[in-house]
Each structure stands twice: as C-alpha cells, then as structure tokens.
Amino acid sequence: MSRETGPVEAGGGDGVEANTRRLEAGIETDFSDKMSYGSYLALDTLLSAQQPVSGHHDEMLFIIQHQTSELWLKLMLHELRAVRLQLASDNLRAAMKGVARIKHIQRSLTEQWSVLATLTPSEYAQFRGELGSASGFQSYQYRAVEFMLGNKNAAMLKVFEANPPAQAMLAKILAQTSIYDEFVQLLARRGFAVPAELLERDVSKAHVFNAELMEAIRVVYESPDDYWDLYEACEELVDLEDNFQLWRFRHVRTVNRIIGMKRGTGGSSGVGFLQRALDLVFFPELYAVRTEIGN
Ligand code: HEM
Ligand SMILES: N[C@@H](CC(=O)c1ccccc1NC=O)C(=O)O
Image 1 (tube, rainbow, N blue to C red):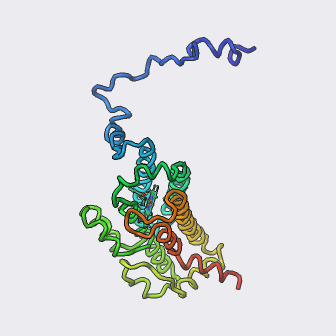
Image 2 (cartoon, rainbow, N blue to C red; image 1 turned 30 degrees about the vertical axis):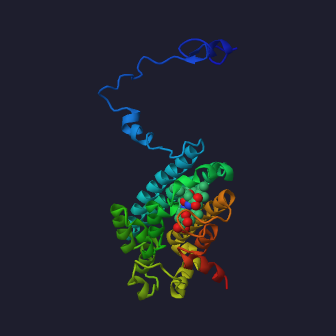
Image 3 (spheres, helix red, strand yellow; image 1 turned 135 degrees about the vertical axis):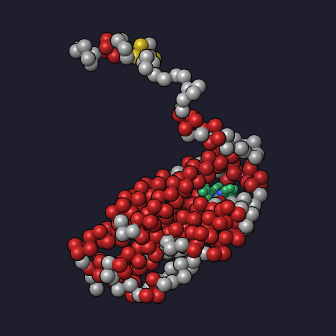
C-alpha cells in the first residue's frame, strides 16, 4: 500500500483517528462578538416559528411543509420582481437567467409534495379540526406569484382584509404589469404586430387569449433562427407555466388522498375547486401557437 492511500494513513496523521475528525487549530469557536451561522440566518427566530396547536406528532410535518413552501415562494417572488424589471428594460438574457432559477425553485416546491403525501387521512384528521378556517387559500405570497404571472383576480384581495400590509402588497402587484404583459410589450418594441388593445389593456384583469398576438408569436416560431432569443424566451415561459401546473396538480392529488371529497377549511368545495384552477392559463398564445406551427 502507498503511504497516501493505504489503510494505515486513513487512520493516522492529522486526519481521522478513532473514526473521529480532529478540529483544526484555525477553526473559530468564539462568536461572542462576531457574526455566526445562527445569528446571520436568524435561526433563533426561524426555528422558534414552529408552534403546533394540537400536540399531535404529525402536525410538525404539516407546519414545516407550509413554512418551507412559503420560504421558496418568497424567493420566487424576489426573482419574479427582478425578471419583470429586466424584461421592461429589454434585458432578455438577464431575465432568462432569473427564469432558470425560478424553474429550479418550482421543481423543489413540486417535489416536496411527496413528503406531505406521507400524512395519512387518519393522521390529518387528528388535528384538522384545530385549523379552524385557516387555509392555503389565504397565502398572500402564493397569490402574489399568481398575480405576477398574470392570473389577476381582484376578488382575491377580500381574503386579506384583516392583513393590511399583505393586502397592500397584493393591490400593488394587481395594478402592475405582469411578467407576460412585459414580454408582450417587449415584442412590440421589437417590431412585432402586437395589437394596441393589449398594450393599453387594464392590467388589473387577467389577460385573455388574443389571436393577433398569437400570429405575432407564430412569426417567432416559424423562423427561430431569426429570433433566437425570443424563441428561447417563449419556451422558458412555457416551462414556467408547465411547472406551475405541475405544482397545482400535485396539490390537488395530495389533497384528494388526504381529505377525499371533504369541503375545504377555507370554505370551498375542496378538490373540485382546486381542479378548476387547472383550467387557468397564464400564457394562452404560447400554447395556442403550437396548433398552428407547420400549417
Ligand atoms: C393536508 C394538506 C393540504 C390540504 C388538505 C389542502 C387543502 C386545500 C383546499 C381544500 C384548498 C381550497 C381552499 C379551501 O377551501 O380551503 C386549498 C387551497 C390552497 N392550498 Fe392547500 N392543502 C394542503 C396543503 C397545502 C400546502 C402544503 C400548501 C403550500 C403552501 C398549500 C397551499 C394552498 C394554496 C396556495 C391554496 C389556494 C389555491 C388556489 O387558489 O387555487 N396547501 N388547499
Ligand atoms: N384547506 C385545508 C387546510 C389546510 O391545508 C391548511 C390549513 C392551515 C394552514 C395551511 C393549510 N394549507 C393549505 O391549504 C383543509 O381543508 O384541510
């Protein structure tokens, strides 16, 4: 055996002894007047925010699943805000870098449904009653993400009457252009035949399918080499929408396996209500154009 790789070296020297790693002399241990891992990340605050109301073992899973989702939603909103401004300033490459990150966040959010799916109906029933009328429907960050992507609905603001800062944040985003409005405006600046009514539309309403816009987008898809950056951007937006639908789908399937056809704590019919969200479309022309390609 060589000195570097042999079994004798593996257990001796400055490395590992008795299967225990020795701390190196330079390792910092005194954080009385320095920033540490925990103080930087506000871990005392973060880790004291899990306050089960029922005393049931499985409520911790339920709380942490929601809290981690809200953290990822916070980052997604932060990135979406930047993407919106980058599109508005014709910085398509930077915007697409942001979208790439958002797609990974979405993957994490969607993947983590598998953790909650280990919660059985019997386990959830033990503490569901204690949740009262609280529901994910009242997630203002989720609603903000939907608004940023273009699923505007002023009626949603009413749910946040008791939380004025959240309601104000949503009212602001409702009145702003969405990511898609900004993309459509960018297409117009690039010389595409975008109908004026879309450039002057009431952005507090959901965008509805527009055949003329689809024709403008069709030009991009018919000649990708001429409009490569726009072609790529269209496909990135389709990825974003697809990923969003996957999250909605996993939600409704998880809800179905945990509460069946019970009504929701937030007052909706439950699974049926969530299922109808799968019919909502953020970027209808980007999907409709696919039927036209090659015709
Ligand atoms: C046991 C687990 C869950 C059940 C049974 C459940 C059930 C429901 C139901 C029935 C609704 C419709 C509104 C209502 O009447 O309450 C809803 C909405 C919602 N839930 Fe959940 N949910 C669960 C977990 C989650 C998690 C982990 C999140 C992550 C943040 C979440 C986020 C949402 C959101 C954002 C809505 C609004 C959806 C929309 O407007 O289309 N839910 N949920
Ligand atoms: N709407 C759920 C309750 C629920 O899931 C929930 C309750 C409190 C905080 C977050 C929740 N998550 C998503 O809706 C239900 O009907 O069981």
